[in-house]
Amino acid sequence: MNIHHFKCIAWLTVSLLLSCCGKGKSGLSAQNNDTKVQSVDVPTFNADSAYAYVGSQVEFGPRVPNSEAHRACGDYLVNKLKDFGALVYEQCDVVEAFDGTPLNMRNIIGAYRPESRKRVLLCAHWDCRPWSDNDPDERNFFTPVDGANDGASGVGVLLEVARQIQQKQPAIGVDIIFFDTEDYGVPMFLDGVSSEDSWCLGSQYWARTPHVPDYNARFGILLDMVGGEGATFYKEGLSEDYASAINEKVWNKAHEMGYANYFPKQRGGYVTDDHLYINYFARIPCIDIIPMMRDSKLSTFGDTWHTVNDNMDHIDRNTLKVVGQIVLEVIYNEK
Figure (cartoon, rainbow, N blue to C red):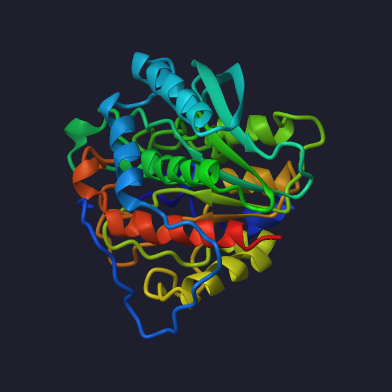
């Protein structure tokens, strides 16, 4: 893979950093001998529910901006957040893709306890890649990605979080943001063409123009590709540089809960993703929970990334459960 053609999830060099400042399975057991700590009054994350939300998105077809599937799925997400008691905001505008294509962007925000100044931001992107440009078969390059893991998994986890918040409010305000137009960056088959800022257009828009004036949050957690089989989540480099204390909070919680095999306390590579713009423009410390699969043959993000195989056959309820329960533990223990 050409290092300069990683979507909005590209390894960054140090100089670039300085220049910008299951398959469905049921059941889950801890995979190490760490002592399990039970937090008080934290809801139980329902992996079956999250899995169903992932599947509902995929059933619309690839959620590529300007498509009917994109419009219909956006309506679904708005209605689900309303059903779960959130105050919903929408940011709708036209943004320009790297090739000049106008894209109908739709950021979707669900706010809980909007009156509270003590807030946490949770986010994921909901759009799909228009091309399977990392597929081993070049004949698939122009096939849109189903986006079961790359997009729908993070959204599915956050919809289940929203459902739990409706039933029991945490002590703080929570904002759930589904960013649009994250995955429309320069395709890998365009040799010699590269632009990091062609990715993550929705988060760039929101970070410069948040849904409410003077928006602030204690910290943010971005979920990207959090439903894959055998996922391992290292501490992403930008997250360490911008928000190391939040990484520490999340990874410590993972180890307390017995999920050290999923969340090793090791630093991973630099990834350009929606969290970069939240950190840089919105000035909110935000981390990225994103897999780094060191044994993958096709990509550090796994063998299904930007291929026609990013479908429900490779979504694992266990991974959804681990990530979702950790997120719940973090936000419900925030005071």
